[in-house]
Image (cartoon, rainbow, N blue to C red; front, side, top):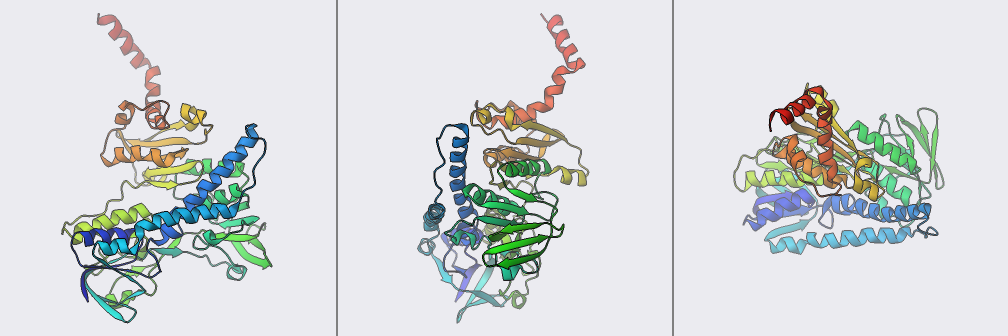
Length: 469
């Protein structure tokens, strides 16, 4: 059979591409290697992790209630019920990714491994499917570090950790990136003794340094052990007991190990060479229109990068649809991409960090404001964090927010960047009191605080009030 479009991969990027193209009348085949649609985000990534975080937040709130005297005692935590909640949420969202829904759009949905046998055909089982155009959206897999003894000791990844029904008494998390810190805090709040081992000198290496430091302090205050600048020389196991030997000579004892050291593009076994598709360790190479080295073959999502986020995969799918369906030479623009780490406090950022601005020779100033001075944060007893906004020539070029609801607050700043609004537009916008969003306005206003006290401005105000009746 020959199709207008063949989409390989049933994650967010592939699903958006296939469903929209089919609804617009193209003959589309969607091929997924696993037994269900939805991809890593739904089954082993974003959705289950945030669902577990929600359960852990309830446990933490109860614990704070006891500490404040509001509650008499801490109730028992049923980890199996927490996992059941995760499965329930995944199941509800899975309904939106029912294969029959996509078939109703006119999309031919197939389950099986797709392998290129040429630049215009793939084989699925015993069948050859030909297409005018292809989209590769196969996602990514956990990247496992080469540590002596790790394989023998056994470990969990995001693909296995949500299958557990028993809470580990102790958990060592290898990796201090977003996945590592989110799950470390969740398991700690549910009752595990948790340690994070990170080779870099700080957590969240790609995020704002001040934000990462604030989060580290909060995690440590909750009892999570942080081993930064700590490589692992070996892992040993004795029964259910595991020991991580660090290069600095110290050890970390644990019952289970969670590896969260990043992701690698899922390109193995796709037959990319047969199609003449160029790729490297970073994934499939694409241009700004998401085209591979074969112009009729596109790629979206984690398999090509440059940013491994669900919202980026969906955005890239829109770029591909514009090019394939409407023949518009639309190009991807990653200037404004919000990033959120869903810990407590949340860490969110958009645009440039200070390091990137400095490397680019950009002149800027930083406006800062503490969450502890936001009245709503005080009312909610959530004072941790701060907002930091980078302003250059009157416009926002980057921002980070650490604190409650940071993942929602960052979007006001992202929109300002997207439409190239001036920073003062945020200041002049009326913000409801006592909303958390006050922090964006007050951060920008902090840039002008010095002007009120300057001798020139005070003199101008004095003269105007005496010269003009």
